[in-house]
Image 1 (cartoon, rainbow, N blue to C red):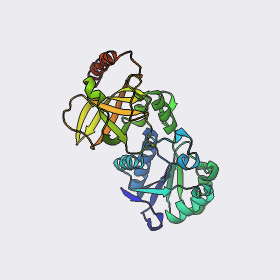
Image 2: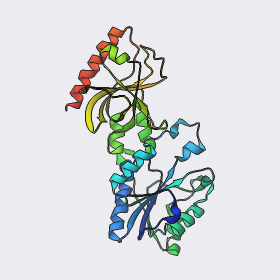
Image 3: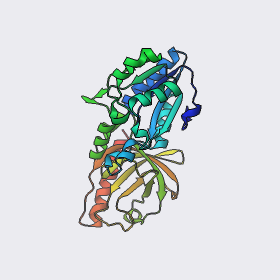
Image 4: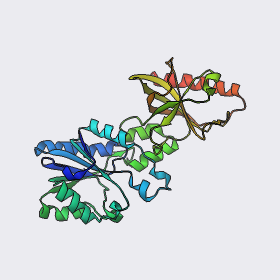
Length: 310
């Protein structure tokens, strides 16, 4: 996959194009991507995906927590690369860019610069200032500018339309299994292992404290999770905790992300780690004593081992 951060020198053969944020690169997005690649092969062309960075809400609604991302820029690029897209164009999103009308965006980017021959969009896609650009507009001008356009039907899972927003809602509620079905893969985080207070080691469960690569990454609801972690190109089973340590207050962090690797021994500090969320085990809870906390952690451990061994 070729990545373009500057559209001025872009050139592709018979471009088959889609535009959107594609946060999460979920199963609905994959339906669009598969159609792009299919049309590119049929028309001796190249698939082109146009996206924006940073996320528009980060610029237009910086105070809104809903701007938290399912995928960071790096993660999105990796997922799109695996999807088989030929070309990825990342347009810088600014307040100035947000003022482009849908007509201006279409003519300048899709027609003049990319020279789109085919355009594919999702069932609820809108673009341009005030989100007024849509399938109907593209259809009306398609003959004049010599391209075809099609709109795909939604992907429905468990009677719900798949979208980035419904995945965020499920993660915020801790519904990991539902979120993973909508995504088509296990939700994951990437980060660096940093020095903690070694409280887990004192309790008999040494943990790796994780600092996220991007503070805009959405974390699932506080609690304990069954996870699989990739470290030094190996995969380990683990139990991960997200929360505020109500039993043993931390002097380091307001919120911790820490994982206990169930089949690992060795030093991990400063190493990169990727963690896949498999299932949510329980809410965070304040215990009356460290002894009660240890008993609960042991119970969590055996429950997670049983779940991950299936």
